Length: 249
Length: 249
DNA sequence: TTGGGTTGTCTAGATAAATAGACAACTTGA
DNA sequence: TCAAGTTGTCTATTTATCTAGACAACCCAA
Image (cartoon, rainbow over all chains, first blue to last red):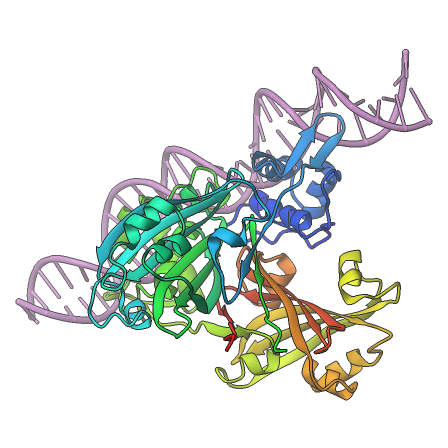
């Protein structure tokens, strides 16, 4: 249960109710408050965080709007539960399978594709040698919830049809298969976190200023030939990344 | 360079200048603005984000206070650069080595240790079977920058002296070695992201509302016997997690 | 040297967020 | 049934943030 110092709000750029709602969210998906539990009363929260009851109410209202809690007049505010999904990251990371066993009906959608010159860093990783690249923007949602948005980069010469097949199949694995690639592996993954941009907030149905987990990864053929550079932004409030540690048996 | 829609700030709980400074930070550590580059002028930024020049100034001031940019009267505001550190996560993840090759003088410090009943979920993962646990809070900093805070859980019966040896050596690996454990491996790692709590912000010298990357991991003996459950919160603005993908050769 | 463009600083006013208090509507358990 | 405790709603006030305009201090290139 939340039991921390009053919210420090000396002009941090964050309103008091936002800071409080984030603390409460922590208690909920940190496991200190379970589905069905009653939150502390508005008066208790107000006192605990050193704010007025109305401010505490606004924090609760924000969580209620997300469907995380539900207030009932006369009796209190209750955790309605939330599903944090696990996305597995490992040697054979594939979007389509990693979330599939948890949620129902999940869909990939291609938003946009274009032929461009890749930024130098990406061109280097894909070993483009001056050839152009295909950039594809996709989103993924499962169980009615937006999970992630991705930017994929492919070598235009090596995979000229990847955009159309990806648009048709909705799966990178299937699209690569259609291009004669039966297997690929994850060569590197770097994880960071930051605030969502306005565009990301819209695509992922997040409040502005919400947090995204950012993975930047390179997929290659088993031999090491680079295939895909992909940057994925996950809605941090809905996803945890589960990292695979293969045993060196 | 930032070229996005005006900041949507319809009572999001985030002030306009904070949203703008986060967008600018993105341009900087996303590689669109390099060290030495000049930011757009205050008037341009104000127009681009649809705010008053004073609001744009406040966004810049926040970045300047972090040392990310530097304003020079008459000529403009320039990126002073920033070091994002890579923390490697893999089968043999150890704090002491993973950041060591990048930065100079890095130190681990034990803040607190106590003998407690572990939360049920952690007790299960450590297979405590009713025995008590040792909880140890540590911080890590390198090159004068606070990197992370961790909460470690150990089995009291199995490792009764871990707190004192950890306090003396400053290294989990060394402390385990002193208890006769020469090797251990990372069994699982789950990564998430959220806003920092007030305590974390203080320990990591972050502004309130800053973001932490949270890893929750289990270390075991090579045979699978659980040793340590550890939750680490990294300052997201200073750290990226670099995930190891061992090749199945 | 000069003029245009940049950041720094000041004043004032408008808008939004937080505080303060009161009371109604409702639930629950004694 | 009743009393205590809870959330919902309203008004008013204070405080913080954002806007608006003006001008000084400074840099730099023509």
